[in-house]
Each structure stands twice: as C-alpha cells, then as structure tokens.
Length: 352
Image (cartoon, rainbow, N blue to C red; front, side, top):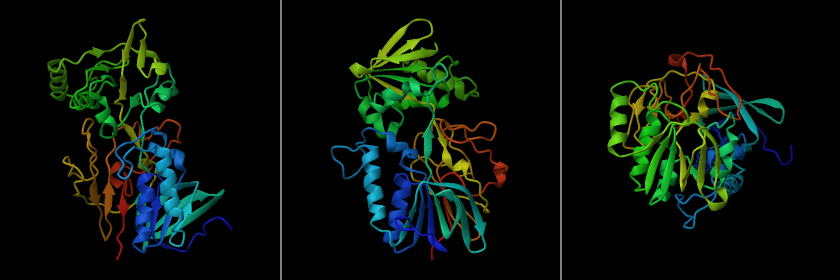
C-alpha cells in the first residue's frame, strides 16, 4: 500500500510501544544495521506527550515539551524507513515464543497481523494514577497541563526548591515521596490523604517508622477529602476540602504511583533473573516488584534458553489481576503470576 509500511516476513527486532524509549530503541536498532518493526499505539499514549516542559533532556538547554520531542523522534525514525517498519496506530494483543524467536500479534488498519522477530522490546511504559475528585479524574488535568501539579520526582523535583508543596497520597509510597520532596529544600510540604487514613494498610514496623519520620520532619497531614481545585490563573494549586476549608500551594505533587502497561500483553517464556542495576536500588528476586517508595527506576534482566529480558518495576498496584488504567482498556491476565513470561518492560531474545 503506498504511504504505508509493508509487513516483512520477519525482523531482527520488534519494538512494542512508540514513546521515547520505543522510538529510540527502533532508531538505535536501525543504526546498528538491524531490521525493526515498530508497533506504536499512537503518540497520545506516551506518558510525556502531555508534559508541557521538560528540562532534563540532553540537547535542549531551554527545555522541550514532550509533544515536540516525540515529533522529532518520529521524524528520525521515518528517516530510516529502509530498516524500520513504523506501524501506527497499532494495538498489540499478544507476544508468543516460537521455535525461532517471537510472534507478536497486533491490530493495524482493521486487520490482524503477526510480526515475527528474534527479539522483542516491550516499551509500553507507564500511566500515572490520577486522583479522583468526586468520581472524576479529569478535575486535576488543567493544573497538570500547566505544570502546577507534577508526577515525576526525578523530572520535576528540582523545580520545588523554595516552593510550598502539597503531596497527594496516603500510603507508604506517598510518605516516601514527601521525604524525597524534602530533599529539594521546599518552603513547606503537606501531605493530603484525600479522605484516607494515613498509611492505611501499611504493615508494621514500616507504618510506625514512616509515621514517626513524618512527625519528626514536621510534615502536616490533612486527611479531609478534596472536592475541587482553584488558583490556576495565578499559577497556584488551590485545594477545596469537604469540610469547607481551603489551602493554597505553589505546587501539587501526585504520589499515587503508576500503572505498568506491560501487564496488558500476555506472553510466555521461561524465566530466571539477574540484576542489571540501572540505579542504586535493585531487586534481585525474579519478578519482584519494587515496593512503594523506592523512587529510582530499577531493571532486572531475566531469561532462559537464549533469551534475556529487561524489566522495569511499576509503582501502581494491580487489583484483582487487572491493570485498571484510566482511559484505557482493561486486560484480565489469564496466566498465574509465576507463569507469566514477556512482561513488565522487557527486551527478550538475543541478537547474534
């Protein structure tokens, strides 16, 4: 079809996901003289598509929006169409191990296709969990779009210096996020639990330790439910509470974690594991999940019979075996946890 890529019988690499990581993986694969099929659901499914301004991207001293950066990365991928088949919008439905590699089934142009390759890179990323106010998650969107409410401590923590900050959350992850925010020397920090008891469900002795630490650091805790926001014209995060009270902050920070989109892809492969530390915090148990509050990204390589995988643990918990991502479809994983194969941000297979 003119203007559309033609699906080849096989590839060296199939990349699932067209955010920053997926686009870079496809480009690098092509530059290393490998054939690549890039299966992209669309730019709007990239987490940073909605980032209004990022200053931690090399090569952009004045910062860049996530949207603009994605546009430039897509242009770079399209410049190598001789080696990259860029299929978008494409929805991957399964990844299966075969005798000579992997078979990736996806829907594209209202047809079901299968891309075959020696290696699969899962780069579907994460979706932030959004605080629901009176049953709606879009209430906070205008403040997030104006970078008044942040979600990534590594990306935006630097901008909290000398500002008053409201951290939204109630569990151990939220408590540790408060401690992380304090390391950036804000003017003040308060923890808004949005109607939930502080550290509800956190086991001892972790609960007592975190509560004591918050008290020692002088962090106020507001347990009243939030019912609305204001102050956007003044570039402020104003919060209205169910008891009629109101508080104003320079910044809001969501500490609800995220949903890992890789759980939406069923697949099978044998698995062992080994750490591949991409930060100072590692998890060495196969398929273990980073507990809430371990802020730094961690990767675990795993595989068997000539396969290897890169795993990025998620923050947001799964409920009843589901990845209940707001605005996305829900996938009920048919495999028990100890039988799942391709999942959680992996690269599987090996290139000769």
